[in-house]
Figure 1: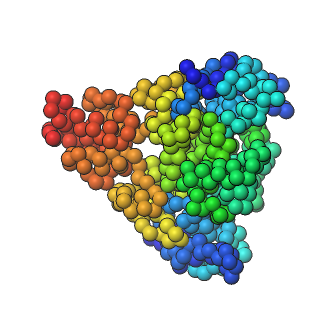
Figure 2: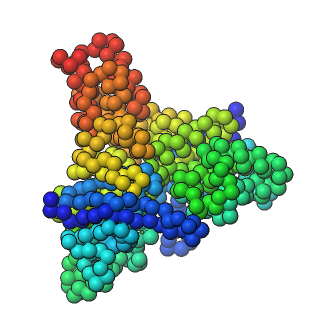
Figure 3: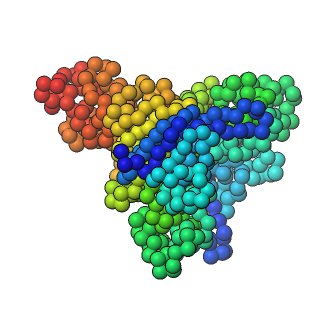
Length: 285
Length: 288
């Protein structure tokens, strides 16, 4: 596998002031993320997803084990900037990620800090804003944008560094349905059109149906790893993990229990409708 | 029956007379029956949050009135203060507002302000914790040592402990994992059933409001542009899309099935509904 991110026996624990025993969050986790893929990470609250994600660009450093980004060890301070240039992060709350008073200045923040010449900064900012569909609003004030628009500006800010991988930590949790759709469309575009590796942490199952791979975490370990069409048919197991399945799978699962014989891997609306239809056409009835 | 809460031509303008003047809600007429469960949906900036903050007097209307049990809540200072106890408001991410040393103290903050006796406070704290799905062994813990889900439950219990007649939630399940969402929604449904409290819930989750609400209000650009039962509202797929909203995915599956020629009802918005419709078709021996 041509992996862009690789963890080896990654262990992490949080220390609280009162507790004598640190709370172990990641327990010797091995994960490789292939270049150019879209990987979704699911898991109940407290399963360690965000802690894992924060290791991907060195926000957190392993207590045990190693994390490599294109072969660079994230725990080596001298090469930290190289790690950060390669892996960008987008978080849940867009308001916490925007720093400037004008959209394009916000997007320029990272390339300015990386010391690129002005013409190149201009080019990077314009390109990034076009990709997320916010170019026309480049002179707006970020605080007057909707949540989805702010989030896309935050994504543009990361793209302006030309990262090879972008890690999204629940980017749609605070957005309305339109904002959610726009952000997910942008995420898919990064992978499909720009060959950027995407890691998406989410609680919305339907956002993962276009992922190449779904990784399910529980108590700091990986418990399931496979393409969505293999993962979601395990409806009961997913629910035991505190998760759910897309409604498309849920309806097929419920009907299957009523004696219909359906495949449970029809994830899209169209696939699901066609699968239901099989019971009423030809020999399927 | 008289509505428990009502608004008349409720209008709020932010930054009036400045270049940033913005009408957040514009002439809203609204009524909620006692015990009703109302879902509010609408895009970001459509006026939902401004609207609900008027209902317990947190912000004052630019014009128009809010009536609780027939009385203007801004009539006197006492009336406004009383409204804060009778209309509970659970903000988005309410766990950020926890501040006490222990869970018990945090939940009892509201009832204490109501100047109730120790015994009454204790009774309410335990009752509210139960409704919110919080076990009593958390009572002596610091709220900051709890998990995210438990913190949110603590905050919700703090509002329930005031035994409000109307309880308003702004996105109660945002950021919770799927089982956390389900449990919290079940807790809210049970609470409403046992207490008869009127519930008003703002949500971006069409699936959540589809399953729970008696009536949906759709906000768009400072107005209520659509209202009705979930089946009424979710039958307007195209219009909802132009408003930046969606319908539950199962509704889209039902629509696609109709396009493919399957004679199922138009008003399907939960998995349960669609399942029943398909099972019924089979029983009727339908063949495409």
